[in-house]
Image (cartoon, rainbow, N blue to C red; front, top):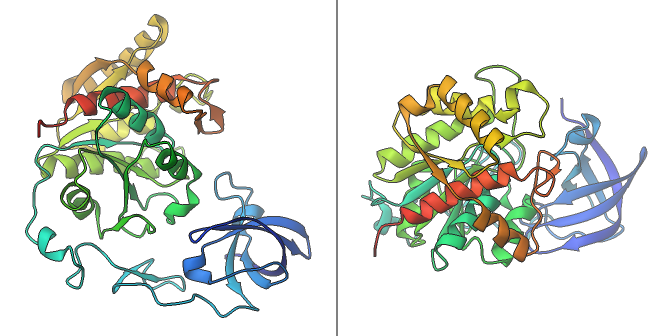
Length: 359
């Protein structure tokens, strides 16, 4: 059961039209809580609020804050949102969006009969944090590329929850966002991954798309029970739409869990069970011993037999992130402490940039 409690806003530390961070005084003490103005309306210090504290009580990582559900002293959302396509359907938090495919949308006619993305490279990731390395790898190789981020609903649902996306937009590493499934808050809203890829290509005029869940990957220490298995499904979608599917490897030598050390079992499972099409798998430029370990894991997993494995440079992308002052964290580790994950992502971005069709 979700845990709902009342509290009072003491201070607001961050305020925008998309996200509010506040300190809330509860009976049990003061907590940090986040709210989304489009859903809850205006908030001010002194307002009494209802907070979902489930993540705090479960001591979660990414979701380990309170979420503001209702302002007991406010009027609610200022106005109804556009469109009629519902996200988070049939829950108390369902919200309407103007989906690009919907008949009432100005873009409906342009997308109504689209079934191809005409060779657009699509990089499928297994972690939200990988979008930084991928986008930097693309930009380092192709400075003028229009880069789209398509966020799925396998992690966090509100795009404004991602500080990383905001940073990448501010540093010119992401040009356009699209939220698909039940995720919401992107520049474009789409119903599914197929129409989302079509939207960023046709409406956003993207040269390349990066697809990843929002913050917060779910795992269960079982073969199939993890949210990043969608990586294979995304690759299938890109291939079905005549795109150029590229897989981003999840690599870490700082993770002491056997199933995630070196090449994660999440990547192997996504590429061998979920992915039903041949895709490009870039392997980053790692120190010799580490590279040999990853290559051996790829061979044992059957990746060389099923897919096109290529070597690629990730260091230009890593350097670009450093130049822009971005220190990407993944699974609680800085890219300075565990650079191999960012190198793998940047290598995927570099390969995708090379595959952008000539205009």
